[in-house]
Image (tube, rainbow, N blue to C red; front, side):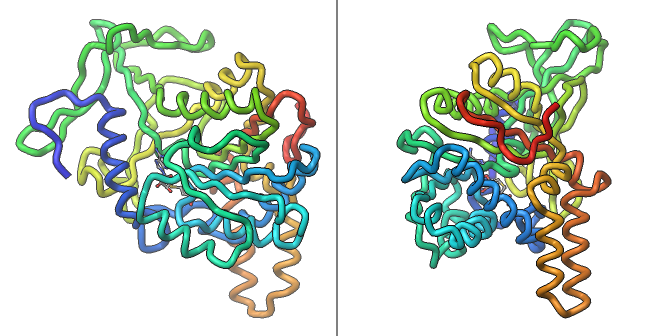
Length: 350
Ligand code: SAH
């Protein structure tokens, strides 16, 4: 893909353009792609989330119909694993209307293929706001980290915006004055910046979260956000590229590798808090999955599996999803809910 030469491109514009191109190709996820996500590691992930959806639907008073919304469903694996569990609860299955928010035509096609054969109606949308308002349960796994971030860098001249300039078709880092009206939002616990400090912010993530929170104020609903990120913000550069399962230079091969950044869960909590929407977490993914029944699921699967190598695969997958040295701690789970609902399963009272 082509960017203009000799022109400052703010980092979020660069990431947005690259990722739109990258996801349109639809070959990102899986062993043949650039990265693996939890639902692609094991069906257990989607199965325990399916059980969580049923429990939440029950806590919501079993609204019929209800919308089962997924943002950025990838290959459709997570939704398929959840719908298999729903199928065993005829009331919930009959009440569910599936809404998928996906911009990539190729991934939409992959989702259609994966989800054929399930009974709930499925609709695709480009944007969450296109989904008609109704009681809903929303899941977003590794969606927010794919949205563009901005980076500011502190210098002897104060804060500047980081971005990219192409020279002879080759990208290099550059800085420019902050957009007019932009003030860095530095949480009070953070020390004063020193030159070289990088501050990340994602207007795109805030915009998505705002839409969900606005709906939660008017509709009974819950949104489960699962992603890698941090609960306590600090200075630092979390922007990264993944290509063929290895870290790569994010300025190389624009549009052909996965560009992501860690999600600032604290910013999401603050938005919910200020809007009067309830939130639980962020919990560590490992604690959350175990608390909603992952161990029982592992035991059940081990009982029905005879091949030793398959048994080993199940145990390894559970380890990968939950162990602190793997995805257990870096990945976090935040549940936003409309204010009147009881606390969801999976979050210990704190
Ligand atoms: N949730 C999946 C895939 C994560 S990859 C999984 O866990 O495997 C990110 C997904 O979000 C892809 O499906 C990508 O096409 C989609 N996506 C990225 N940016 C988007 C945007 N702005 N709007 C809608 N979907 C987007």
